[in-house]
Length: 226
Image (cartoon, rainbow, N blue to C red; front, side):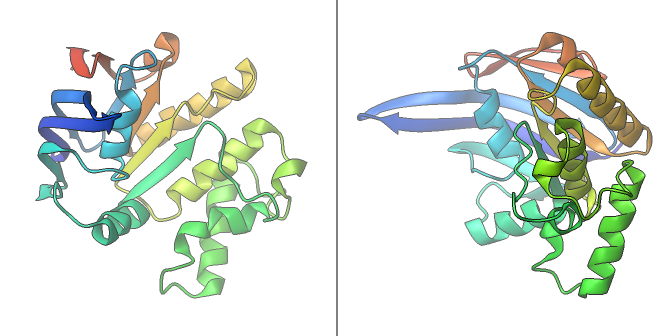
């Protein structure tokens, strides 16, 4: 498999009250296309910082970061935003749906600033929502949907651009056990279809759903089951 993400000696330092705090330190990680990887660690382990770097939401303080074999370590915010919008699909614990917007409109949000005409955006969103079992819910608002259905809308939104990477942050954290199981089955299906998935969680049982687990402690990788 070809490499999708490669981190080489990545560090991220924050300054608080004049004191430098290393959130992640000397992290080396390679994720190949088609892998299903979980990143696990307790609060304060650095997993959120690492997720922000992997998702191009933040830049490392030092080290090299490659995405599709391109060095993106020093790209400006505009270029990082372009990678986020076109290459990465995000799924969050809180769904992050627009409350006054229908499921179909929420699903096509990443396409709004593209040159794809509205009819095609609608068609793509309908297809993704139908694939996730929401064909009869496309004009419902988030408050008319269950938590599991809202997360399916969020997954449809993440898939709308056919991203290279799906990055999921505690995707079952706000769901009951049955809905959480259904969402994880969707992730397994997406993985079987060839999608690259990174699952970020503090839940060891959830992390074990992935083929590979990367365990963080004090900003360092202490175990990688690769």
